[in-house]
Amino acid sequence: MLGKWPEVEKLLSVDLDVRLRSDGFEVVPASGAVMERAGRFTWTHRDPFDRIIVATALERAIPVVSKDETLDTVLGGGVQRIW
Image 1 (cartoon, rainbow, N blue to C red):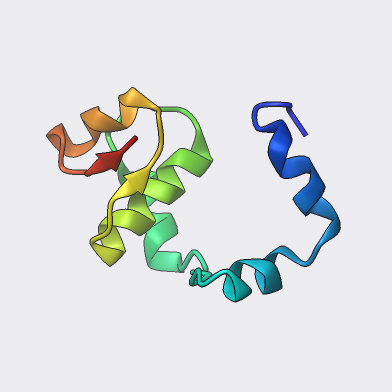
Image 2: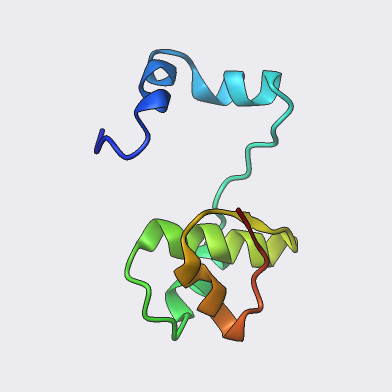
C-alpha cells in the first residue's frame, strides 16, 4: 500500500470482487484488446494502470473518474474525466 488512499486499506481484508458486485459495480476484466490499445497510446503518461483505465473507458465509452488532470490530454481531450 503506497498510502495514496488510506481509506481503502480496510477493504484489503475483504473479497473485493464480491464487495464491488454487492455494491452495484460491474467488474470489467482488462481484455487483450484493451491492453493493446493502452500500449499504443502516443500519450506520454507513464503509469501503466492509468493507461489501462483510459483504454477501458474508451473501449466501453464511459467517463474516467480521476482527479489526475493529465488524463485530459489523452487523445486531444477525447476522454471524459469526472472529478
